[in-house]
Length: 134
Image (cartoon, rainbow, N blue to C red; front, side, top):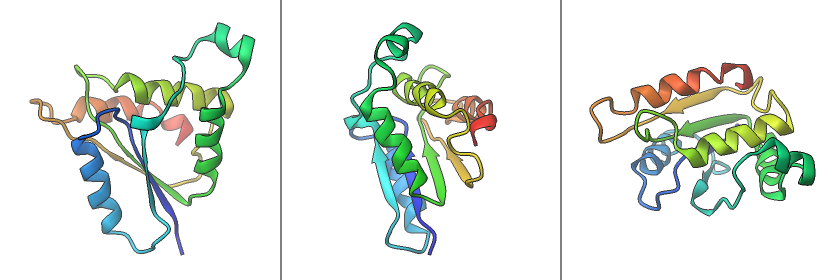
């Protein structure tokens, strides 16, 4: 049985992207699917100096390890002023320092919705630029 992890790239407790991710997971078979909500992620803003001094934070290593447990990934993220939310971009920055191809070989579904006029299209476009890690 396939296991899917949905990462909600928002730090909003009432995120409509979380609702979208829950809906997407509900359409999949399996009871081993899980939502990872970044509301609870406590990771410092990526800095080369911080990485050199302290290495990759334990919180990021835990996310990296969790990714390896799943066969496929859903990324559901809003659009903040036309860009990826800082909390989500920060996670991607740190994960890329752990292993540059941290999702390679896994099917990845990109989802984004927003109340803005672009409805998340620019956020999805930004995510497509990360294709080297997917």
